[in-house]
Image (cartoon, rainbow, N blue to C red; front, side, top):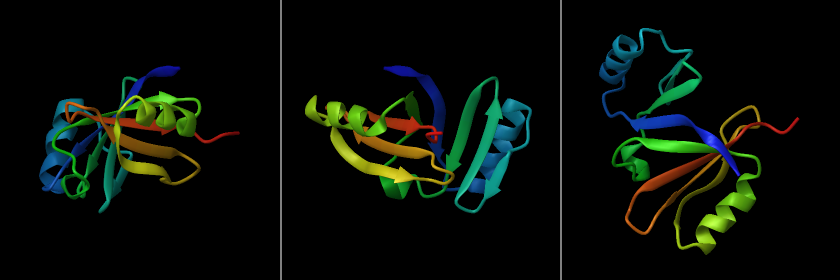
Length: 116
């Protein structure tokens, strides 16, 4: 079961330009501002900018669905016909992500918060 899409990641070749646009749109400064990721939090939503997104196959924004057990959910998606793009990876502090492509080419991300 998912608790919704809590994170949306945008590929951003021009990280500085994208950061300026999203700062203006969201009316907040990023909480994370690194060469490899810029992240904003607003209204319970995380918006991320990934300068390597296009190289990872991102063609547009990718919603990341919050799940309780990422490995089980990823296996279910693969069994249902999704194509693996990124296997489960710890992106820091125990937060796990993974992504797949559905049969129509849409990208779907999964995220699991650190287990206490």
